[in-house]
Length: 135
Ligand code: 523
Image 1 (cartoon, protein in one colour):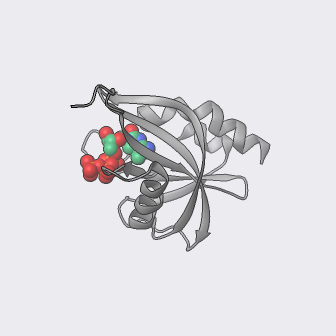
Image 2 (cartoon, helix red, strand yellow):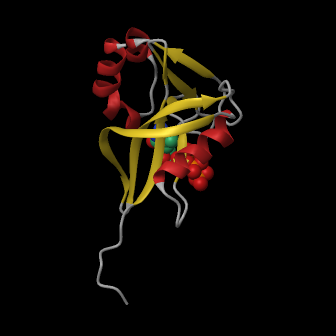
């Protein structure tokens, strides 16, 4: 038995910026979140790094190859032992398509504020807006 505290499991979400816009994806499930918009991503598997998980999830969900960059914004607690974190994701190849979402859209700063984002992702609006305004 180890005395080390168990580390939080992580859900990763990717912020992809291009030409002054941010990619958002519209969820199809669960029913409470369907129709609402998010930064795409998913759960980090056991023994997987957050960086590899983000690359895997965005390949599965958007059919793109990305390089995971720096963290953006705060940790968002999802449940005891599970935390949601956003990372920049640089597009390396491919054009995003909605394999797992209802649709995708690229928003500027003003549009971001008018989107029905999932509650958790609203925590990152200040940093996302700052980035979009600087682009
Ligand atoms: N969020 C969230 N925002 C956000 C993501 C990628 C995920 O609030 N940008 C939440 C939604 C779920 C949990 O994190 O409560 C897991 O995300 P999900 O369902 O996208 O991850 P999956 O597909 O890895 O999860 P399972 O299908 O449940 O394994």
